[in-house]
Length: 372
Ligand SMILES: Cc1ncc(COP(=O)(O)O)c(C=O)c1O
Image (cartoon, rainbow, N blue to C red):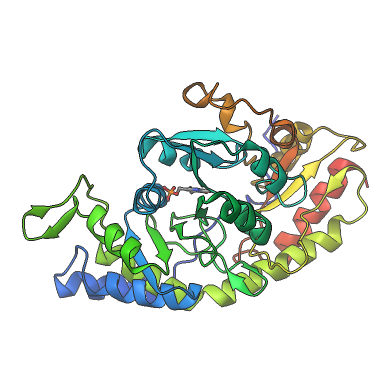
């Protein structure tokens, strides 16, 4: 029997490259200035303006951004750093890269972000920092997390990789902590293939970031401390600058797509659509469902059914980080919510490249499989 031909694969992510992006790269190539140069400086100025921070420092990728942010914020070997277990592995790996120990503290059901109360009860004299992750495009409860950090004298390092442009109380992700990191990986809302940005209001932290990305260099062949080659190229920056000029339009499109999915999937038994918390905006890096008790099919049956219908749904994330060998046994705290979410979540395409028929097919497919 011939294999069933799917409707058409609707990818979970689809970078939108325009002629303007291509022209910007060609211009850099023609200039002969390929490494970190004027386009990186331009990106840094524009991105700091966008986030509402004094400084932005560009680096090679989001993991480098987080590593640099932790070190520049003063995290040193031997420190404990609170991180959520329900996130991409880079969040915890960067803590290890800084020589510190990630201490996993559970997340909330509703926004998938770090639970402020559990965070407060997990602080010990070894704790020096916290890395709240603004997962899937919505910030954590920044007021609650920052209040706990202030009370205990901890530095807040935001992992804003997935939340460029998301706001809480009108303030953008990247402007809450002492320092914040972003990823410009190809699938991110703001992307340039690979890239990272770090934001801060603190001139000393910004200076340390600039030296850290360049082998700790403070002058020609003068190295003040260990650093790395974490530089971004002008080729990457040229794409990021062009993409940044289109970011508000693409975010609006993601939000509109999410509303179509919210409406189309409303009322399905055991299918929880994403919550937007009061006072916050969501930029929908991912549109993530939780498939709960009461749903007639399992999460994995829904995933398989969607893929048969050409829908590139995916699981972010299938395991809590403390289940991986190199990160296991690092925390004395149970993480029941993260454990449960890892078994319940399923992300649907929501990106700005979706057409109206794509969205209709997504909704119809979920409804058909769930039977609602
Ligand atoms: C939450 C989170 N943190 C950190 C990263 C690391 O970024 P990159 O892949 O650019 O190194 C990512 C992206 O992949 C991420 O989603």
